[in-house]
Image: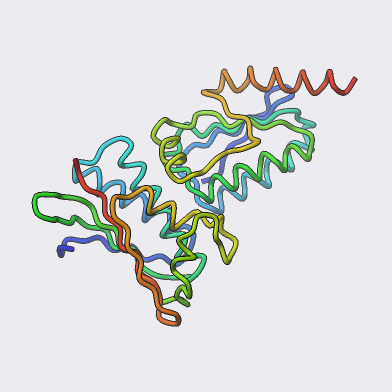
Length: 124
Length: 134
């Protein structure tokens, strides 16, 4: 299922609405890479609250999205990983190394405010 | 495995989602809860993806299994793909011949209580895994 992406100021918010197939994940990746350029976004939140499974492919794709967007000049934060999903990911030995994570949308916004502000200051 | 098993044909990446949803639903019916449901669904996702990547097509069989007084769910992933030359190597974490992370099979083993793999080159691969109710 297609993932809607909302523009909120300098940020993009992608809210996953239902289970994601491999193709949906790849579409989201390409969609975000394009929109970050179009809207000159500085940060992206990917909300995965509804996902009941984050397997090795999903983890790899989310990591790839975050690294691609970083190369496009935007920070990514993944929010809403459920406790059971986190447990399964740990059991699988999967990490989101180098990718920002936060509890929920609110914390995700706070995270982006923090890291994008820091980037701006470094740029001076 | 008993006769009341579910059979999910795997022929594309979209079938991976179907397989794990059916598996989760069956596990829930059988009395599994919370984190076990997620572990079972994730393990199914990994073995189903293994079929798609390496064999293109195959089947996932889901059903209840009993051993003495123990009850559990059994998941069999079967394909007639190229088979695995070195099973021990394929079960090493991080080892991958194709585009995968090399996490799928060893990961699925960690998620389940029992895991068995039989493969012969040119004939295919059968992965059998179980999780017991406790």
